[in-house]
Length: 304
Image (cartoon, rainbow, N blue to C red; front, side, top):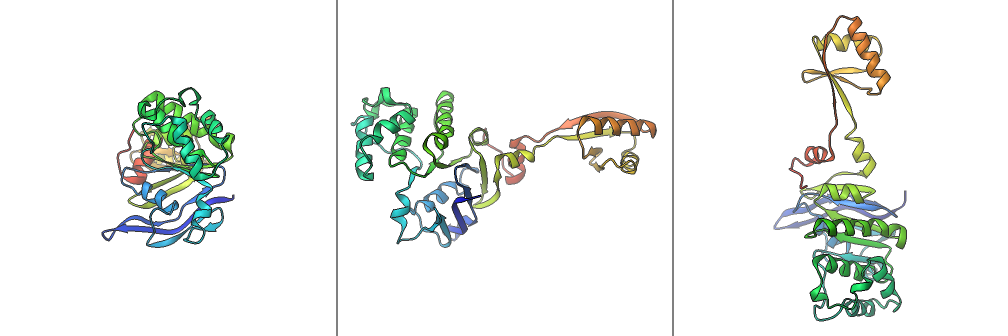
């Protein structure tokens, strides 16, 4: 799988305290990479290093197959759009006038303004002064500015912060539509697991500056797969009876864990235990939620 962003041992410290600690990030081309972690985990610092706004103490960054350094930084950044922290705008100018300024700075064609306005669905509000926009509209304006120049890579730092539920839904729909409509890769940071779960194709979880999980979203969901426990009158006897019949089982706490959870395997297991004279008090199906997995990985309470 081709990687549009690769970092190796990326490290940044403040006052001798590592904020980003030996980070090895891999972002597949065409993906929506959810960069997830508690507040203060190092997400914004990492994104700023990818933009060359902060210099790492050690490690390297590769974007579009090229090492980000002082020689080719500007060439790489020409193909990157970003919305870091809160959007910047001139309140006394209209949305379109704000975009015209950004378009001029990026040397993008004039017709691109209409294109990005359509992408973020704010054609009807383009002539209103930006200072009168709602928070959601300001976020859309910031996203439209980031999309000017047709970037191949888009970096979004907590883009749903401060939005109401309707605004969050609209921003989520916009983000998920962009890879298909604009042929780009997106890195979106958030401390909200539920948001990343509904947007991302790949996930990186960072905690205390360290990347503690990185894979596809489906792989993260695999950690929450169903588990089946039996409460019996004789757990050790039950495990012995099941393993003798070739049914994988083990003791876990005060229960028997069945490795296979399909209906036929469960029926077989219960039938053999009954024949062995072992009483079954209860059959329990458990499943770790993504919030439970996040808590297990980070040791922190997840924001919902």
